[in-house]
Image 1 (spheres, rainbow, N blue to C red):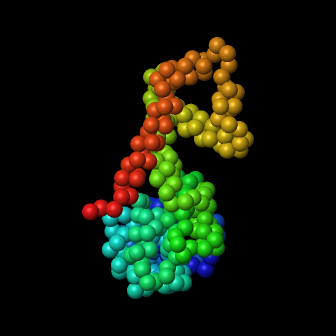
Image 2: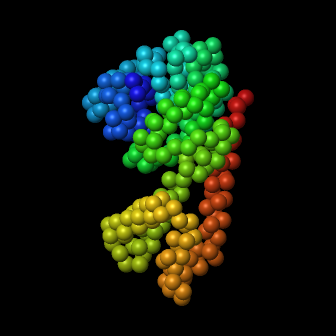
Image 3: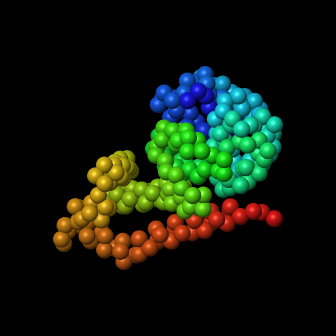
Length: 270
């Protein structure tokens, strides 16, 4: 990777920069970041040795550009950048809810290729999950380039754009669901008599270990659950309570609600 630019230097952009540098995919002096916040620019330059700029139009010297700004400023930022954009550029957008058609319209006439991505916050610790959808001009090579970015901070999949709402409701919002469950487990441990530090340590390691076990074994969750569910034991007693409360249905309804909201937010505003 010869070089990469970021429009927006927030936490997700920083996570990607950290992952790319750690993986050795690009040299620090070939990374450019545009952000209006001087403190943010100084932090990124000091911490990672990247080039920093205030003007978003100044970072289009690299052919690969990541759009990492808040959705409400996308149109304004791309209007400023349009004169600098060209057919040599690949724009990878992680701006939530901004459709490919909107991005391509904002850069109309430039022939800039566009890829839209829905990442999630565990990218901050190089354990993210991201879904990518190609624009009308993006090639297979462009998708491979974009996947390198997100595989450096986790894992990625390629999907049709209409499925990104499902991704938003599942893995985009998913960390909040998992953290709510983690918080409840910690509180349950405290209620049972453990101190907060001990309960937190045990819960976090249990969640991490269980997820790692599921990924490494490839077994269906039901099979792994059966391994710790003895007849007449403690686990089945707890699972019965969760079943009675409709735990599985609650989780599915939560994801469905988030997917609906994602679709609503993606609708054009009058």
